Amino acid sequence: MLFDKRRPPRCEYCLHGTRLDARGTTICLAHGVSDADDSCRRFVYDPIRRQPDPPPARYVPKEYSEEDFTL
Image (cartoon, rainbow, N blue to C red; front, side, top):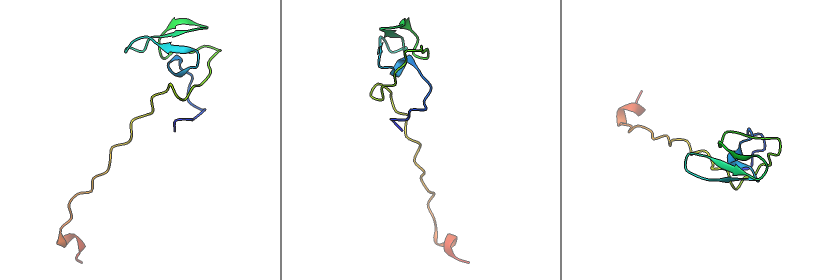
């Protein structure tokens, strides 16, 4: 759910934060330089900045034979 408001606050997807590098370091207008896991009281959720969770692995059923359907 991309627009889930119950997600824990993180600087990584805050309206005031901007990502600096691939390690997750962010720079915030209110808090300064911080890790992506940090948050402050000025946190404002921005759903556009959050990367959605990867989709679950697809279930691939096994191949069935004619014997599987006989009693």
